[in-house]
Length: 412
Image (cartoon, rainbow, N blue to C red; front, side):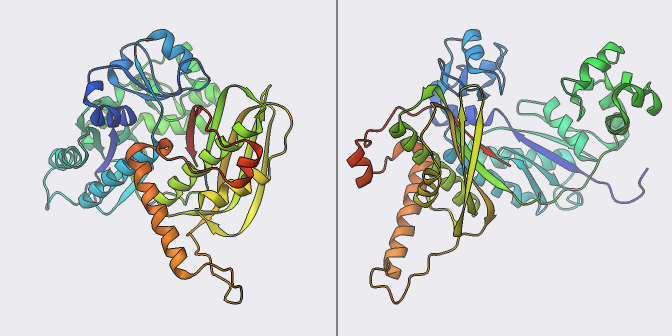
């Protein structure tokens, strides 16, 4: 046992975040089963759902047709990622007032190191209650908080108390707390490992402790065995800090039926570019490499890339680059756009010897317009504004806006 200062790690997870935002913004949805994700009748999955919907067995990543079968009367909404990102920004600002050591894990959860705050704030229970109250006051949403001596215990504790929970596990109670948990809460216990453990009669973490490391290795292999052996005894990292720099950001759309119309594909890609650009600006990043992803019937998938002369977060640049990589051919099931080789946005430097170059005032006006559009997207969703079709589109008769298919954002 450590004889140094007590370590207190907090895991904070917003409750049914996307659905909770929608219910907050539209009080008529409160108390109703709300599913955010794909629309019934098409491809796609559930992004998240309200606790009212979870009573029907609906959960994240469930195929949307299965969710609709279980609860056809639920309210099905498309995600508003730009809006959720803006709400998340306010939540992270609240976290930063609690402790400077914050490690975001996703848009709606983070680890915080709250060690040493006892003299300033009080015991862990007080620290957790204060940050939950501050988030509720700031954005009108509830969070579940788990606090323990390391990341593993904190994460399991926050899940254990959902929704709107606050669970503190002192070091001397870790073994008892973990012992009663199902083995499925441990990292590395997935669809392949769980059946092996269940066949051995290992239902709880306490059951797992009965096996020696050698016995575990014979069943699940040395790497997973070592991890489970330590986790079952509450041994895990207590380090919290900034995550590794993001490597890419992408957005993709799966169509309900395969699409061969280049006009629909072009307009869909333009929308994806707008969402990727908006998300990039929210995080203060830009891409140097643009990737186009195409999937045909039978899951045949192709990706093409092009490197830009400078980092960009401009939707028109991303769209034009990705569209230049498109080659007409077989009907498309999925189309996606991504950026990689991330860095800070780089301003376009005008050529002083080119009379047609933009003046600085034009660049400033363009940037202010972009900021205004971002604010509209954050409040009303990316689909709230539709840009006028360019002359090439008009000439091709592609200036009609197609019905927006289901899409989801992916970051890595």
